[in-house]
Image (cartoon, rainbow, N blue to C red):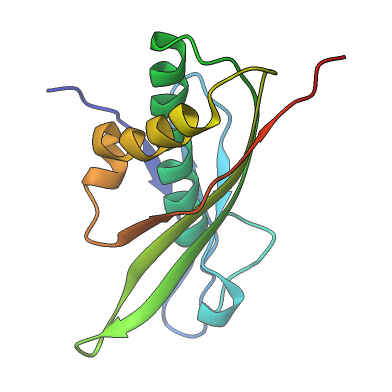
Length: 149
């Protein structure tokens, strides 16, 4: 089993109104300034758990998709994802109910667009972050073949 250690540091007092701001980090990487979203008393200038979850799912899916594309010799040129994390109340408890991935994927001229779409969908099966969630992951790619120059 692999482990990925990190630390989360917060300081303040909960005796009254308290800061939701904290710092997440790990050895050898820049610190992340984190908080909750403003609707939970935090700062929109910092990453919140919903942002980080969406980024984790999207990054894992991208890396898995690129590996599959490379294996099948599909020439992907760019990938620009617009990710949305949806929070709902389910059985009186708030939870992430859905993560929507909607990338614009550009491929080299002559690339089989339908095979690219198939590999994008297949990547979900192998994305271990997405497979670890209860939330639905909705995939809505737009795939464009670039024109020859």
